[in-house]
Length: 299
Ligand SMILES: Nc1ncnc2c1ncn2[C@@H]1O[C@H](COP(=O)(O)OP(=O)(O)O)[C@@H](O)[C@H]1O
Ligand SMILES: [Mg+2]
Image (cartoon, rainbow, N blue to C red; front, side, top):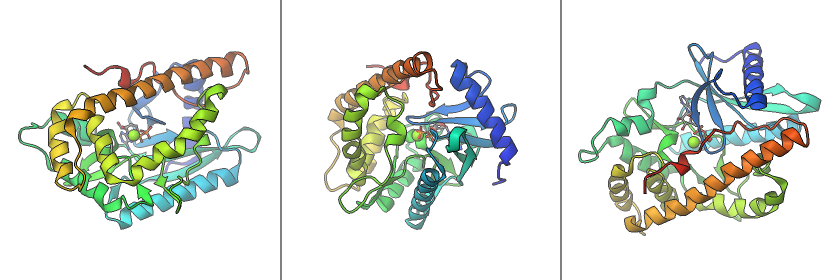
């Protein structure tokens, strides 16, 4: 992949800055809103790179810690046999010694993104992408490492599932605590809820240390992406690999519970954005979509 130049990255930051300050994202070529970040295509007119802005790090050392975690995570996944979209971790200087982090990838052809691949296929026939994702999950989920295997995080390239979401490395220490500094993302929420989220966060993430949860999460989130017809296919393929099978009949209720939380977090971000902007008179650092996919599913 051709590296994006420093000058070009400054232009990205200026464009994202305008979107952050105006809530008008129309000048950006949004490739996708994820759970924690937004992928922006750059240059907007004909994107070559997918750039994902991370919230600012207090200083260079904090950024370096994050960058090392991401690159180590990618190496570990690749060593386990999981394909990852080429990803560069970059930084540009921010105000008062802070550091703005960007993950930079080549832009993938929309038709290769896993949700589109499944949309174009027939669940009755199946698709080898499903087994390829499950193989990847089983290969890298070892108690110390996990992977976010939601369908939105994969592409189908040269007959292999390739993961595109390494923004939040799921790496755990001996006690099962995530090495990622969750404060990075908890900063998106109003301070009154930060303490509870800080407490709950490690336990929530620790669920991805086991393949059963990762595959359950993959299956149930197909509701979000309107791919529910694929749920039986995924559950069948997953259960062929798990000692403790997934109960398909419980997935809808599990999804609804999870979706409620994401809808609540989305609302809290909007509240905090208002507070930061109008009371604290400072920039809110997260691009928040107008609505969340979690509130749009059929019941
Ligand atoms: N390299 C890429 N090329 C094209 N689209 C991408 C790329 N990376 C991400 N996207 C799109 O943006 C969405 C959000 O990106 P992702 O890295 O998954 O962020 P998050 O960690 O917030 O979920 C993806 O689900 C996908 O639709
Ligand atoms: Mg994602």
